[in-house]
Image (cartoon, rainbow, N blue to C red; front, side):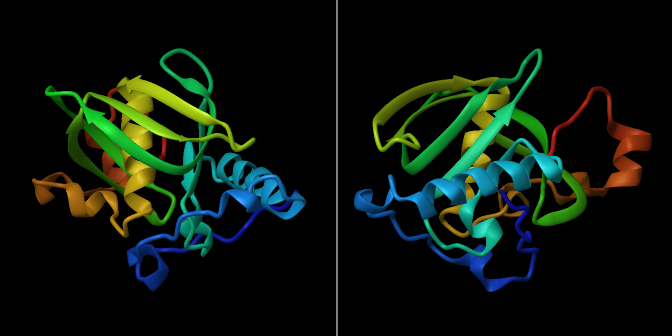
Length: 176
């Protein structure tokens, strides 16, 4: 496995629409290695989610996982589509491995339902809430060329990490 370089804010690949993955490629050794490398990269940062555009691959692939209380299982989403957005909105602090050292508040639906293929190419249908829902939405934004800062409605909450830690952090906020 390998830790891959993260594309940072300003890299044009982060603003592109990612290409769907050909299902014939999913079970190849190279594609499975890419998934493993993405998980290793995500954990090395450390983060709880990583989309392929963040490692300079413009394809519809997302990996995520967050252990512990309030966390969610290790998940791979290939060609994901959100098929339901719950009516309730929640505001959460978000950060991003591609946007170093910044946090900001983003309002998103509190519950979603996503359909995708898993790492074996089998269909999955996931209803997610809380942090899982936020992570899925955040990572899927990368597949359409959006970053969390694009979703912020109040830019006054954009803060650098040392100030976030000093003035705003009330509980651990994972980097998505």
